[in-house]
Image (cartoon, rainbow, N blue to C red; front, side, top):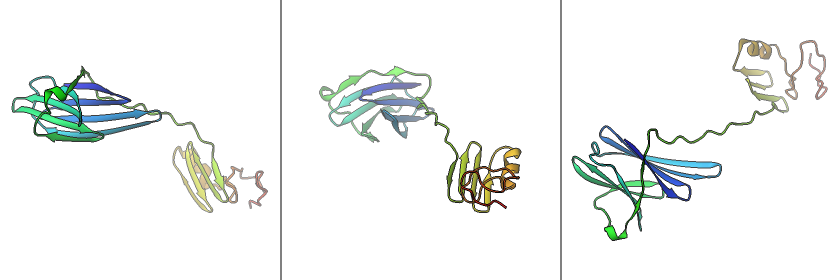
Length: 176
């Protein structure tokens, strides 16, 4: 069983019962950024649905289990068990929705980067190739490895060159 509650201002809480463990994840989102904090507590299996409340000291979660009630308090990104529930007149109920899966933040795609070169250093990310002076490193297909082991880059600026080039077309450095 898992539940999700919206706390407002880009904040939400995810509560899940996994065997005898209760996992609570506090999620804070803003444009271009997402933070999550998770804590696990040994509570036993839930006998009732959890309840979520806003209190003057933060958010309170009430869990009913066969072993009794457990109370958890969420303040900023700190989640801790507390002994007693705050007075009911100070609490405001927050609705919880039952969910099937935990929330997963979207992973933004990265734009491809052009090869980077500086002096006798060269780096390309697609496929990964790096060169510093006479030292080469590459990851990817065998063709890529073959290319990098045949000195196909200018040792001065890192620009790709062919085996028949005498001078670098980018910086004019003598290749052979």
